[in-house]
Length: 599
Image (cartoon, one colour):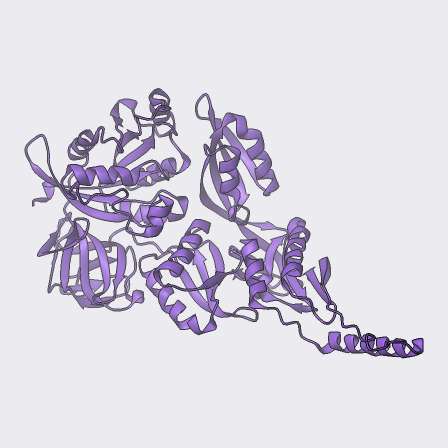
């Protein structure tokens, strides 16, 4: 099919605005999937995606559609995630398209992630097709949403297509708009092979399968290829398209999206965003789109059974293949044994990776409390990056500690502004400015430490606003702050699994929380055990583990009181000696309970 009859597009929106449902209707209308086969969230391949109702991975599919002008067009569609943690998935998908359908919920209006994804698409130079979805809802407010499109996104309201993906309204209009408004793929002048790798999966029998968008030239079985980032050479064994199941094809031409199998055996050989070119006549420049992703949240992942360490290493390697944002290195903990220090884009990303390890690879794992990367300026002028509290330099050599900041955009109903501003202040944030979006919604722009929004910040905004609040953020420069390393001591021995880096004002409260939980889960000992939270040499919180006593005078039925005193003194001396030389055996269940309560 000539490239002038090809259209490449993706669907972008805030989470839960109907992207995957619209994809289902497009598959039905174009006859790509029959009515008998179709099911809700058809493109969401993971059980996890279906259960949570969110898209985690971008999903490509090739559709054929006969337009009103009589021509048969090939439409290459990519359904993208909507959560802020998966923004990199979206940016890669955008680099493989010429057009983007921006979906807005008719009841919710323009949300924070809609704005962020829209700006990503504009930056890539894509043609925007605005669609107002869920117009059949009783609380849909079309006039207000059209006004938001003009005020917030600067899109003329008359360009918006009214649709309901669930009811099948406006699907034909969307397809026609894609044909008329989205330009066909532009061809490169030199016609040398260039294909952008926008995703990949691992197949046990065929190795690494690369998902590609061919920008120029053509790919077929037998083509000798070169990966421009790793400089590795291969021979293509198979090419194909997605319908949405993989379907073998003879050739992939310029403008096509599909998959390539080339005997790539290990996960490290292929990088997402890489350019595939011919090894015989290679292109001189790589395609834009490759960007090393830097994780912002770190946590230790350990197998509960130490014998599963190698299996966990293999599982993480396979996950990293189609999730280039995941990083991991081996580490060792006194409490938890051998495991891995893993880097994630955010807390949802971390949660999804852990859940995939449990489900897809049947790994029984525990994770440590999440932390971010801190920059430590030492007294000699050296700057070191610390992602694990264990590696924090000695306080006497520290000039200052800098923490990563974020610029967050929070959209909330006007009546909740007081509660949200108080939450921002409690989390050491600062409101830069407030902007009224319409008669009932405002947008707050805030400056806040990344560490403070990691765990439950977004959940609290959702509960305060009864689900109407939304948040998006971008990274800001590091800033010096009064941070300290909080150590937890059990019988005067530091436990590295519980160490954290916290703000000095919050250190005592955090120490009390951990020591109180430890007191609950550590079984009673034969001698008094002190649980302490310490900053350097200063103790900020303390609890004592219960002692289990033995009645040594039970055998004395009578006689002189001095005999009983002698036995009690002997027991007292024994306990003192035990406290001096004894070890506290903390069961692994105790570590698991404390870490679960912290997450």
